Image (cartoon, rainbow, N blue to C red; front, side, top):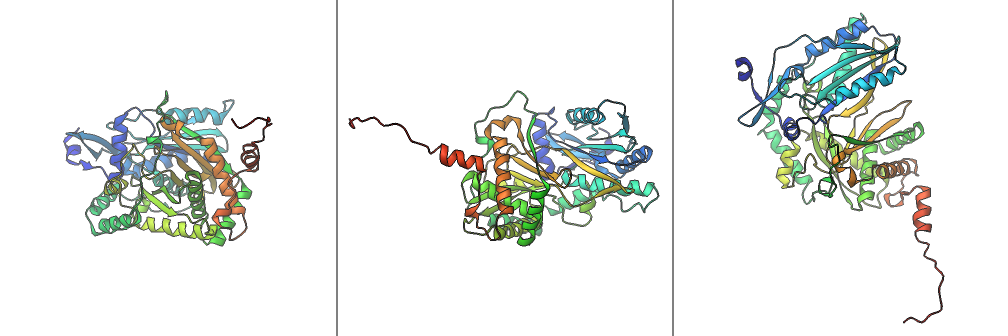
Length: 465
C-alpha cells in the first residue's frame, strides 16, 4: 500500500464490519455481491449508454474503495480514480439473446470478490436487439447497499437524458467520505443514546427467535448457493392489496408488511411476532443521494390480538415501522449486544422482510427501463422475503435462504401459506378479525379437516381384555 493510502485509512462502519467478518470466514463466497439489471426497452444510443456509465462511476466514491487489515483490524481507504469504460456485449445474433446475456451476468455475479485489490463493482452493457438494451450492475455489500441501487438507477437516467440533450444534468452524487464522517459523529452522540433507549423499551422482555442457525440443518455440498422460491402476486390480488391499504389508511408496502406479521404469527403459533426490517440507515438529505453501505436491520416487534380487525393491525404495523425509521441508525450488532442475544451468523431478529419495490419509473430520455433484481447481496441465515416489481403490474416475491440451512424450512410450503394469508387478508370483508382469516387453501382444508380426521375403522366384537 502506498504511503498516501496508508495515511487515509478509515475504520469500517458497523454495517460494513458485519459484512467484512462474514466475508473473511469464506473469502471465495460471492454471496455478498449485490446485482441486478435494467431492461432498457427502446432505441437507446449505445455510445450514450457507455458514456452514462463512465460518468456515473466517475461520480461514485465507492468505486475507489479498497480494504485492508492492520494488526487484524479492518480499514478502508480510497485509491486514485481510474478511467472506467464499460464493456458492451452485442448478443443480438444469439439464438436466445436474453439467455446469452444472463449467462454472462450470472458468471460475473458468482465470481469471488477481491476486497484488497478490487474493484468491488462491475457494469456491463448488452445489446439484445435494435430496441432492447440491458445495463447490468454488481457491487459488493461492503461498498453499497440496496438503497444505493435505487440512487444509481435514478442518477443514470438523469445523466443519459442530459447527454441526449433532453434535460439538465441534475445533482451529482453526495460524498461517501462525508457519509462516513456522519456515521462516525453518530457514535457516542445524544442521538445514539436516544435510539438505544427507544430500542431498549421496544425489545423489553423479548425472546431470541429460533431460526435456521439452531435448527440442526446440515450444510449442503454448495454452501455459497442461495435457495430461492420465486412467485408473483397477480394484478387482481395487487389491486385488492391496494384497496385494503386504502381503507386501512396505509401504503400498500405497509399493508404487505402487516400480512407478513400475520403470516409469521400463524406459522409459529406465537402472538409476539419478530421480523427483521431492513432500513437505509440514512437520515440527512445529503445521505439520501449518496451511494454506500449504510443499511441496517432493525426489529419489527408486533403483538397480534386474534380479535383485532385486520385493518387496525395494518395501521398499527405501519405506525411501528415508521417509528423504526426514526431510530434506524442504531446498529443491529449493538442492539444484539444490549439484549445479550447470541449472534448466529448473520441471523438477527427472525425472518427478514425486504420490500424494495417502490413507485419510481426510470426513463432514459423517454425510453422506459424496468429494474430486475438478481441478488440482494447476501441473505440472513434466517428466511428473507424480498418484494420487487414483476411484469404487467404484478409483484414478485422471492423467498430465499442460504443453502446451508435450506433443510430447516420448506420454502414451497412457506410461500404457499403466505399467498393464502395474503389473499384472505385483502379479499376478506372489511373489519374482519384476525381470528377469522382463512389460513388453509380449499384443498388443504378438505385434507386436514376431513381426510386426516377420518378415523372410521371396522370394529370386531371382542371384549376389552
